[in-house]
Length: 412
Image 1 (tube, rainbow, N blue to C red):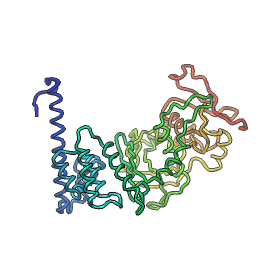
Image 2: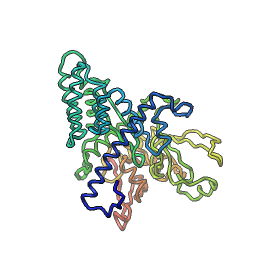
Image 3: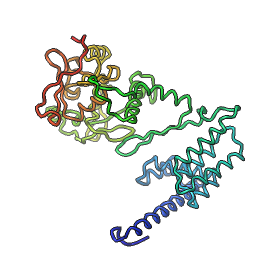
Image 4: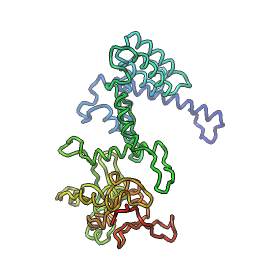
């Protein structure tokens, strides 16, 4: 490689070294795959405490487990598809396209003969080896092949074969979760149907157009689908409890009252909470989730060992939610038309700060405006008439004039 600094290279030198590095990167990937294939044939992890090569690689490096699993999965596929493996090691195809072609050849349509699979493998490798080809082009070719063989009457059509379904949910940057899947036609239609009404544009009451992009509306609809399933309690028991999100935070972090902080002199204030699946989240989000959930208080000693586990406390009862639906009619935030069934019960004075769980300290807020109240300077109060009054931050209104919240005509 060129030993000169990047600023010393001219345009052609920069392009040349980038291409050299791409080639070197592929050679390193090829070498890693070859070594992992060899590891499969030996007991190299014996007594090391790791269940599989991917877990060992994750535990021994700073690579995410998802990236390790993809690398090990590619090695396993290329063991089964040596023709694709040879093309990959020669540098004809990259890792992603090699994985696509090998996966298709290992799971072809049920009606394809071995000769047909071999022919399709050659076609796909030829397409994948072109410089202008991308993964979408290879996927499109695979779909055309599947469609051709799906027309045969014997066997399940490829588009309706649920045994070919795939769904991935992997942790990415900042603890976000990337979702990717491939569903059969029936379950795909089921998902789209359920999302249709939940992801439709919802203009404001004054007619202002919904500014969310279609992608954001679908994401909001999918999150609402998860929330409804969770709230309905329809999930199976796992580990002795129903499906739930566990969020851990110190009492000192979760309260804004200095008097309560002073009662906890030995408690560390971390500035974040923790979830089992995605890691750290902000305290504002933890407090938002604590508004309308089941809370368990656990007392720890100075070493972080639990001493006592208190009773669970639900912050809003079913009768209270019904009363809130009558009083607020849905999301109480000015101009929002989200129905009550899609809302959370928000504590005006937070439960961790000693706020009571009664109607004069609760309002209904949709997910978007619930986040707004916890992550911005918006404030809300219950007025003498027992209706909500919102106060915008100075960045919105320097005079912070009160704005009446939503209220149905029948509300008292």
